Length: 268
Image 1 (tube, helix red, strand yellow):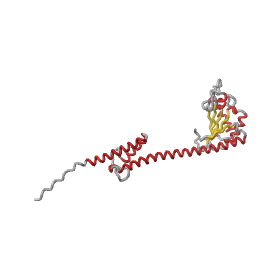
Image 2: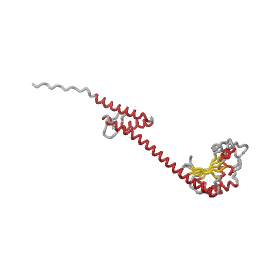
Image 3: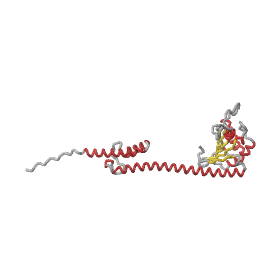
Image 4: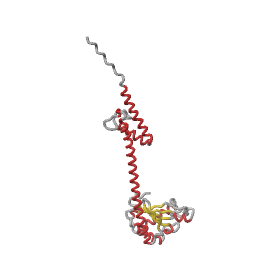
């Protein structure tokens, strides 16, 4: 009689597969924490969300970082994980670099245009013999013409002097060359208080009326279009010199005319 076949023993080490998978997942998780230690919290949150949605590590799934290979396959995913994180950082930094480069290029073109405008204006001032009466300054966004208040107005007044009108007629010849540019007329005063004047109750009001006087003369008498002209007054609040001296106060009493270049949004 044949010997009875011995029963096969039951395997009891199946838990090792599950444990191995768990250790692989934990390893990936701690590598992620280590890699994220040198970045800010916002970037870490973005990466964590990306892993949760795409890789399902944090939500218990088994999808892979790439196609075809599961997280459960172990250390073979670590290289791909590192490459993913590195490329993420490169992409963000690269985008920031492109934005910075574009901004610098725009500013360079703006300054170039303003510089060319200022050179043309200075040549015009020399040709007309009024270069001593108008100060020219070029910035990234605009070219500024500064006229001394004493050349335009009597003390505490907003009515243009006769000689001021002759000067503004020459300035209008400059502004007429830029019909499509935004032009802003700004009035400024010193900090000496205005006393007992029913019309000009403050330096802010006086500076506004002075800017308006220049604006109306340029439009009504010189024929400039009001479509691109603006006017406002800043009173004593944007001094360029010390108001404690007579010389400083004289410098602060001024009218500025800003011609914004074509690449500017005309706001400082």
